[in-house]
Length: 193
Image (cartoon, rainbow, N blue to C red; front, side, top):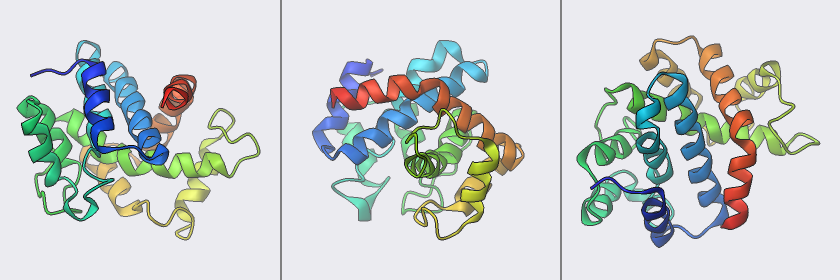
C-alpha cells in the first residue's frame, strides 16, 4: 500500500515520540522531497518523502535491531515493498539488514541520512541556530573535525557520495541547500510535534 503523508506520520509516531527523532524524520523527509525534485523525480516526490519520514521507524525503540525490526513493522502496516526495501537498505554495512542501495532514491537516502545529522548539529553551534547562513566552507570544517558530532559517520557520507557518483563537495552542498530551502517547513512540522 502507498501511504499518504498523514498515514506515514501516524505510523512514525506510533513508534517515535522523542522530539530529536521526530525532527530527524521530518528533516530527512524534507531533504528527500527536495532531492526528488532536484534529480527529476518530481512525480515520485511523495514516495521519496515518505521513505525519508519512515527511515528510522524502529530506531527509537529498537536501536540494536535498527533496519531489521523496521521490515517487520512496515510489513505489518502494509507498506509497499519498494518503501520497505529503501528503509532497510539505508543501514547497509551498518546494521544486520545488509541490503545494498541500488536505486538512486536509496542511494540518496543512504548518503543524506548521516549528513543531515551533521548539518543539524553544525547549525545548533551557530549564533543563528539555523542553516540559512551556513556556508559550505563552514560545513566542510565541521566534517573534517572528527570530534564534532562524532556519531555521524563520515565514512558513510563519503561512501554515499561515491555510490551516487558525486564528489563529496557536491553531496555536502546539495544537502545543505536542501536543508536551507526546506528549513521553514521542517520547523513548522517540528512545532506541530
